Image (cartoon, rainbow, N blue to C red):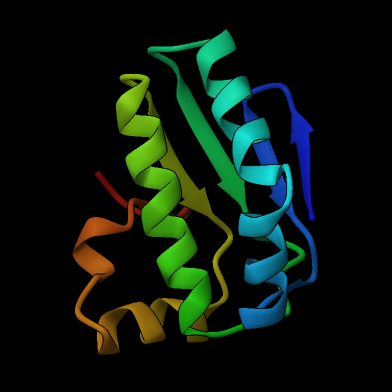
Length: 107
């Protein structure tokens, strides 16, 4: 589901209710906590370049991950989010709390 590459985590193609349930029930969340505890006070990136299928549970999972990162004084940024997922965040009123990095962002 999640591949670790240094301080970057790459998401797989599907992250909907079924997969989010699997992630929260299995060892993925403790694994994320373990990774963050190994390197606290870091800037982490969650790369969604392979994410194809998602729903509102994906957003809930992102918010949960942000809470975990905060526990370790770390920063978690999401990159390469599909436009429709960003729109979904906007619809639910949480776009402002999901740190989204865009290479097209201008300073």
